[in-house]
Length: 326
Image (cartoon, rainbow, N blue to C red):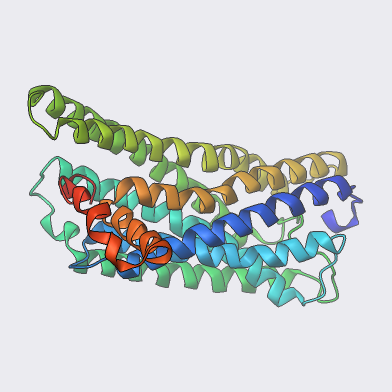
Protein backbone atom coordinates (compact mmCIF):
# COMPACT_ATOMS: atom_id res chain seq x y z
CA UNK A 1 0.00 0.00 0.00
CA UNK A 2 1.20 3.51 -0.82
CA UNK A 3 0.51 4.62 2.74
CA UNK A 4 3.33 2.25 3.87
CA UNK A 5 5.81 4.06 1.63
CA UNK A 6 7.63 6.96 3.21
CA UNK A 7 7.60 9.92 0.84
CA UNK A 8 9.76 12.97 1.47
CA UNK A 9 7.30 15.76 0.64
CA UNK A 10 8.61 18.69 2.67
CA UNK A 11 9.98 20.66 -0.29
CA UNK A 12 7.02 19.70 -2.48
CA UNK A 13 4.54 20.79 0.19
CA UNK A 14 6.26 24.17 0.47
CA UNK A 15 6.01 24.69 -3.32
CA UNK A 16 2.37 23.56 -3.44
CA UNK A 17 1.49 25.79 -0.49
CA UNK A 18 2.90 28.84 -2.27
CA UNK A 19 1.37 28.17 -5.68
CA UNK A 20 -2.07 27.21 -4.37
CA UNK A 21 -2.15 30.36 -2.23
CA UNK A 22 -1.38 32.54 -5.27
CA UNK A 23 -3.90 30.69 -7.43
CA UNK A 24 -6.56 31.04 -4.74
CA UNK A 25 -6.17 34.82 -4.43
CA UNK A 26 -5.95 35.56 -8.18
CA UNK A 27 -8.57 32.99 -9.17
CA UNK A 28 -11.05 34.13 -6.53
CA UNK A 29 -10.73 37.79 -7.50
CA UNK A 30 -10.91 37.10 -11.25
CA UNK A 31 -13.90 34.76 -11.10
CA UNK A 32 -15.87 36.90 -8.63
CA UNK A 33 -15.45 39.86 -10.99
CA UNK A 34 -16.45 37.62 -13.92
CA UNK A 35 -19.52 36.38 -12.05
CA UNK A 36 -20.60 39.95 -11.30
CA UNK A 37 -20.02 40.81 -14.96
CA UNK A 38 -22.28 37.97 -16.10
CA UNK A 39 -25.00 39.03 -13.66
CA UNK A 40 -24.71 42.65 -14.85
CA UNK A 41 -25.10 41.80 -18.55
CA UNK A 42 -28.13 43.66 -19.82
CA UNK A 43 -30.55 42.25 -22.34
CA UNK A 44 -31.21 38.68 -23.36
CA UNK A 45 -28.47 36.16 -22.56
CA UNK A 46 -27.42 33.77 -25.31
CA UNK A 47 -26.02 30.23 -25.15
CA UNK A 48 -22.38 31.39 -24.86
CA UNK A 49 -23.27 33.48 -21.80
CA UNK A 50 -24.89 30.44 -20.16
CA UNK A 51 -21.84 28.25 -20.80
CA UNK A 52 -19.38 30.88 -19.59
CA UNK A 53 -21.48 31.55 -16.48
CA UNK A 54 -21.35 27.84 -15.62
CA UNK A 55 -17.58 27.78 -16.22
CA UNK A 56 -17.22 30.66 -13.75
CA UNK A 57 -19.32 28.80 -11.16
CA UNK A 58 -17.26 25.61 -11.64
CA UNK A 59 -14.03 27.60 -11.29
CA UNK A 60 -15.24 29.22 -8.08
CA UNK A 61 -16.19 25.85 -6.60
CA UNK A 62 -12.75 24.53 -7.52
CA UNK A 63 -11.10 27.56 -5.94
CA UNK A 64 -13.08 27.04 -2.73
CA UNK A 65 -11.39 23.61 -2.46
CA UNK A 66 -7.93 25.20 -2.45
CA UNK A 67 -7.94 26.50 1.16
CA UNK A 68 -8.24 22.89 2.36
CA UNK A 69 -5.25 21.88 0.26
CA UNK A 70 -3.36 24.93 1.55
CA UNK A 71 -4.23 24.00 5.15
CA UNK A 72 -3.13 20.40 4.54
CA UNK A 73 0.28 21.40 3.19
CA UNK A 74 0.70 24.11 5.85
CA UNK A 75 0.25 21.50 8.62
CA UNK A 76 2.93 19.21 7.18
CA UNK A 77 0.45 17.02 5.28
CA UNK A 78 -1.74 16.25 8.27
CA UNK A 79 -5.51 15.96 7.70
CA UNK A 80 -7.78 16.25 10.73
CA UNK A 81 -11.21 16.80 9.12
CA UNK A 82 -12.15 13.15 8.53
CA UNK A 83 -11.90 10.79 5.58
CA UNK A 84 -15.35 11.59 4.13
CA UNK A 85 -14.63 15.31 3.97
CA UNK A 86 -11.18 14.60 2.53
CA UNK A 87 -12.67 12.54 -0.29
CA UNK A 88 -15.44 15.08 -0.87
CA UNK A 89 -13.00 18.00 -1.21
CA UNK A 90 -10.60 16.00 -3.38
CA UNK A 91 -13.26 14.72 -5.77
CA UNK A 92 -15.10 18.07 -5.83
CA UNK A 93 -11.85 19.62 -7.06
CA UNK A 94 -11.64 17.17 -9.97
CA UNK A 95 -15.39 17.35 -10.67
CA UNK A 96 -15.28 21.09 -11.27
CA UNK A 97 -12.12 20.83 -13.35
CA UNK A 98 -13.81 18.38 -15.72
CA UNK A 99 -17.05 20.37 -15.77
CA UNK A 100 -15.00 23.34 -17.02
CA UNK A 101 -13.37 21.14 -19.66
CA UNK A 102 -16.69 19.79 -20.97
CA UNK A 103 -18.23 23.28 -20.99
CA UNK A 104 -15.33 24.54 -23.10
CA UNK A 105 -16.18 21.73 -25.51
CA UNK A 106 -19.79 22.93 -25.63
CA UNK A 107 -18.59 26.47 -26.30
CA UNK A 108 -16.36 25.36 -29.18
CA UNK A 109 -19.24 23.51 -30.85
CA UNK A 110 -21.59 26.45 -30.34
CA UNK A 111 -19.14 28.97 -31.79
CA UNK A 112 -18.26 26.74 -34.73
CA UNK A 113 -21.91 26.22 -35.70
CA UNK A 114 -22.77 29.90 -35.30
CA UNK A 115 -19.81 31.26 -37.22
CA UNK A 116 -20.29 28.74 -40.02
CA UNK A 117 -24.00 29.62 -40.02
CA UNK A 118 -25.04 26.00 -39.99
CA UNK A 119 -28.79 25.32 -39.89
CA UNK A 120 -28.61 21.60 -39.21
CA UNK A 121 -28.72 21.89 -35.44
CA UNK A 122 -30.58 25.14 -34.67
CA UNK A 123 -31.93 23.86 -31.33
CA UNK A 124 -28.40 23.36 -30.01
CA UNK A 125 -27.80 27.09 -30.32
CA UNK A 126 -30.71 28.29 -28.19
CA UNK A 127 -30.34 29.57 -24.65
CA UNK A 128 -32.92 27.06 -23.48
CA UNK A 129 -30.97 24.13 -24.87
CA UNK A 130 -27.73 25.39 -23.32
CA UNK A 131 -29.47 25.53 -19.93
CA UNK A 132 -30.64 21.93 -20.39
CA UNK A 133 -27.13 20.82 -21.39
CA UNK A 134 -25.52 22.52 -18.36
CA UNK A 135 -28.15 21.12 -15.99
CA UNK A 136 -27.61 17.59 -17.31
CA UNK A 137 -23.84 18.01 -16.98
CA UNK A 138 -24.13 19.09 -13.33
CA UNK A 139 -26.48 16.20 -12.52
CA UNK A 140 -24.11 13.64 -14.07
CA UNK A 141 -21.12 15.23 -12.33
CA UNK A 142 -22.80 15.14 -8.91
CA UNK A 143 -23.77 11.48 -9.41
CA UNK A 144 -20.17 10.61 -10.33
CA UNK A 145 -18.95 12.61 -7.31
CA UNK A 146 -21.15 10.56 -4.98
CA UNK A 147 -19.90 7.28 -6.48
CA UNK A 148 -16.25 8.37 -6.27
CA UNK A 149 -16.54 9.53 -2.65
CA UNK A 150 -18.33 6.33 -1.67
CA UNK A 151 -15.79 4.09 -3.43
CA UNK A 152 -12.83 5.99 -1.96
CA UNK A 153 -14.20 6.14 1.59
CA UNK A 154 -14.86 2.41 1.70
CA UNK A 155 -11.24 1.60 0.96
CA UNK A 156 -9.70 4.23 3.22
CA UNK A 157 -8.77 3.92 6.87
CA UNK A 158 -11.03 6.17 8.94
CA UNK A 159 -8.22 7.12 11.31
CA UNK A 160 -5.94 8.18 8.47
CA UNK A 161 -4.39 11.66 8.65
CA UNK A 162 -3.36 11.57 4.99
CA UNK A 163 -5.26 13.27 2.18
CA UNK A 164 -4.57 14.16 -1.46
CA UNK A 165 -1.97 11.40 -1.55
CA UNK A 166 -1.04 8.55 -3.87
CA UNK A 167 -3.27 5.52 -3.32
CA UNK A 168 -3.20 2.02 -4.74
CA UNK A 169 -6.40 1.12 -6.59
CA UNK A 170 -5.96 -2.58 -7.18
CA UNK A 171 -9.07 -3.09 -5.05
CA UNK A 172 -10.88 -0.01 -6.37
CA UNK A 173 -11.18 -0.78 -10.08
CA UNK A 174 -14.50 1.09 -10.43
CA UNK A 175 -12.83 4.30 -9.29
CA UNK A 176 -9.87 3.67 -11.60
CA UNK A 177 -12.24 3.04 -14.53
CA UNK A 178 -14.03 6.34 -13.88
CA UNK A 179 -10.66 8.11 -13.84
CA UNK A 180 -9.77 6.56 -17.21
CA UNK A 181 -13.13 7.68 -18.61
CA UNK A 182 -12.52 11.26 -17.47
CA UNK A 183 -9.12 11.29 -19.18
CA UNK A 184 -10.70 10.00 -22.40
CA UNK A 185 -13.39 12.70 -22.15
CA UNK A 186 -10.63 15.31 -21.88
CA UNK A 187 -8.86 14.13 -25.04
CA UNK A 188 -12.15 14.06 -26.97
CA UNK A 189 -12.85 17.65 -25.92
CA UNK A 190 -9.27 18.69 -26.67
CA UNK A 191 -9.29 17.40 -30.25
CA UNK A 192 -12.76 18.89 -30.68
CA UNK A 193 -11.37 22.25 -29.59
CA UNK A 194 -8.48 22.00 -32.03
CA UNK A 195 -10.73 21.15 -34.99
CA UNK A 196 -13.39 23.74 -34.23
CA UNK A 197 -11.11 26.67 -33.39
CA UNK A 198 -8.80 26.05 -36.36
CA UNK A 199 -11.81 26.00 -38.68
CA UNK A 200 -13.27 29.08 -36.99
CA UNK A 201 -9.99 30.96 -37.42
CA UNK A 202 -9.68 29.91 -41.08
CA UNK A 203 -13.21 31.03 -41.87
CA UNK A 204 -12.78 34.37 -40.13
CA UNK A 205 -9.46 35.05 -41.86
CA UNK A 206 -11.05 34.14 -45.18
CA UNK A 207 -13.89 36.57 -44.53
CA UNK A 208 -11.43 39.30 -43.55
CA UNK A 209 -9.60 38.89 -46.88
CA UNK A 210 -12.83 38.90 -48.88
CA UNK A 211 -13.98 42.04 -47.05
CA UNK A 212 -10.64 43.79 -46.87
CA UNK A 213 -12.21 47.18 -47.57
CA UNK A 214 -14.94 46.85 -44.95
CA UNK A 215 -14.53 48.91 -41.73
CA UNK A 216 -15.05 45.90 -39.42
CA UNK A 217 -12.43 43.66 -41.06
CA UNK A 218 -10.05 44.02 -38.14
CA UNK A 219 -12.65 42.53 -35.80
CA UNK A 220 -12.64 39.25 -37.73
CA UNK A 221 -8.85 39.01 -37.40
CA UNK A 222 -9.07 39.79 -33.68
CA UNK A 223 -11.68 37.08 -33.15
CA UNK A 224 -9.53 34.54 -35.01
CA UNK A 225 -6.53 35.46 -32.85
CA UNK A 226 -8.61 35.16 -29.67
CA UNK A 227 -9.68 31.67 -30.69
CA UNK A 228 -6.05 30.55 -30.71
CA UNK A 229 -5.40 32.24 -27.35
CA UNK A 230 -8.22 30.21 -25.79
CA UNK A 231 -6.76 27.05 -27.30
CA UNK A 232 -3.26 27.92 -26.01
CA UNK A 233 -4.60 28.49 -22.46
CA UNK A 234 -6.42 25.16 -22.55
CA UNK A 235 -3.34 23.35 -23.87
CA UNK A 236 -0.86 24.78 -21.36
CA UNK A 237 -3.09 24.12 -18.36
CA UNK A 238 -4.58 20.71 -19.09
CA UNK A 239 -2.51 18.79 -21.64
CA UNK A 240 0.61 18.11 -19.46
CA UNK A 241 -1.57 16.77 -16.63
CA UNK A 242 -3.60 14.49 -18.90
CA UNK A 243 -0.57 13.17 -20.77
CA UNK A 244 0.79 11.98 -17.45
CA UNK A 245 -2.61 10.90 -16.09
CA UNK A 246 -2.60 7.56 -17.95
CA UNK A 247 0.75 6.70 -16.35
CA UNK A 248 -0.51 7.74 -12.90
CA UNK A 249 -3.71 5.66 -12.99
CA UNK A 250 -1.96 2.62 -14.49
CA UNK A 251 0.69 2.71 -11.76
CA UNK A 252 -2.08 2.66 -9.14
CA UNK A 253 -3.40 -0.60 -10.57
CA UNK A 254 0.00 -2.30 -10.62
CA UNK A 255 2.50 -3.40 -7.99
CA UNK A 256 4.66 -0.27 -8.22
CA UNK A 257 7.75 0.19 -6.06
CA UNK A 258 7.90 2.95 -3.45
CA UNK A 259 10.64 4.69 -5.45
CA UNK A 260 8.42 5.08 -8.50
CA UNK A 261 5.34 5.85 -6.44
CA UNK A 262 7.10 8.87 -4.97
CA UNK A 263 8.26 10.11 -8.38
CA UNK A 264 4.83 9.59 -9.97
CA UNK A 265 3.06 11.24 -7.04
CA UNK A 266 5.28 14.33 -7.13
CA UNK A 267 4.99 14.71 -10.91
CA UNK A 268 1.20 14.39 -10.67
CA UNK A 269 0.99 17.06 -7.95
CA UNK A 270 3.12 19.51 -9.93
CA UNK A 271 1.08 19.02 -13.10
CA UNK A 272 -2.13 19.41 -11.11
CA UNK A 273 -0.94 22.91 -10.22
CA UNK A 274 -0.89 23.75 -13.95
CA UNK A 275 -4.49 22.56 -14.21
CA UNK A 276 -5.45 24.78 -11.26
CA UNK A 277 -3.89 27.80 -12.99
CA UNK A 278 -6.69 27.52 -15.55
CA UNK A 279 -9.11 28.93 -12.97
CA UNK A 280 -7.00 32.12 -12.99
CA UNK A 281 -6.84 32.30 -16.79
CA UNK A 282 -10.51 31.56 -17.51
CA UNK A 283 -11.54 35.17 -16.68
CA UNK A 284 -9.13 36.24 -19.43
CA UNK A 285 -11.00 33.88 -21.76
CA UNK A 286 -14.35 35.44 -20.78
CA UNK A 287 -12.94 38.87 -21.52
CA UNK A 288 -11.64 37.79 -24.94
CA UNK A 289 -14.66 35.77 -26.04
CA UNK A 290 -17.53 38.00 -24.96
CA UNK A 291 -17.86 41.68 -25.74
CA UNK A 292 -20.81 41.73 -23.32
CA UNK A 293 -18.47 40.63 -20.53
CA UNK A 294 -15.93 43.28 -21.52
CA UNK A 295 -18.62 45.92 -21.47
CA UNK A 296 -19.91 44.76 -18.08
CA UNK A 297 -16.39 44.73 -16.61
CA UNK A 298 -15.67 48.24 -17.88
CA UNK A 299 -18.99 49.38 -16.46
CA UNK A 300 -18.15 47.81 -13.11
CA UNK A 301 -14.69 49.44 -13.04
CA UNK A 302 -16.01 52.85 -14.09
CA UNK A 303 -18.86 52.63 -11.61
CA UNK A 304 -16.38 51.84 -8.85
CA UNK A 305 -13.83 54.51 -9.76
CA UNK A 306 -15.82 57.35 -11.28
CA UNK A 307 -19.51 56.65 -10.87
CA UNK A 308 -22.23 55.93 -13.42
CA UNK A 309 -21.86 59.27 -15.23
CA UNK A 310 -18.70 58.19 -17.07
CA UNK A 311 -20.17 54.99 -18.43
CA UNK A 312 -21.67 56.02 -21.73
CA UNK A 313 -18.51 57.33 -23.38
CA UNK A 314 -16.30 54.46 -22.19
CA UNK A 315 -18.52 51.67 -23.50
CA UNK A 316 -20.46 53.02 -26.50
CA UNK A 317 -17.75 52.11 -29.00
CA UNK A 318 -17.90 48.48 -27.92
CA UNK A 319 -21.41 47.93 -29.27
CA UNK A 320 -20.27 47.60 -32.89
CA UNK A 321 -19.37 44.09 -33.94
CA UNK A 322 -20.59 42.55 -30.67
CA UNK A 323 -22.11 39.57 -32.49
CA UNK A 324 -18.66 38.42 -33.57
CA UNK A 325 -17.82 37.23 -30.09
CA UNK A 326 -21.05 35.99 -28.51
